[in-house]
Image (cartoon, rainbow, N blue to C red):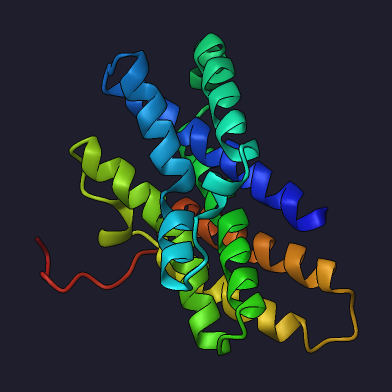
Length: 202
């Protein structure tokens, strides 16, 4: 139940993120729904395909599709309130990557993969929905720019495996790693911490 709750919260966060981007691009209702959908399930779909977990989870459990549709309707109705929240897109995107990183890591653990592969799955789960969203909306994906994004996912995954070695409940290790991802992303943006620029001063 704990992991399902985290998964649903991540779906909601990314769906809202997708709605906000789509509405900024002034897409129609169908376009908004599609962008929200691919943002919410894109990374998880790729993850499931990589580990052979087919049909992918959202095709087996209608909860995810229903959650996305409801989230889209609510987000459209309250879009002015969401826009009023300063940097709401960034906030929901950050919450989404924190939650989805650990969902992906957990799927890798369940599949019996090595920790490094679990961390890679977590990063894919968290990042690639946003990649698909940005490509469809004609933007350069955040993960391919200098911002600390995938790096936060990787460090969050590493922290999960370190925390599981401590004498604490797994749910605490899980929650702690989520907070590491979110915290790193927030700190990186607040203090303008970026990856090195290979193009010099350009």
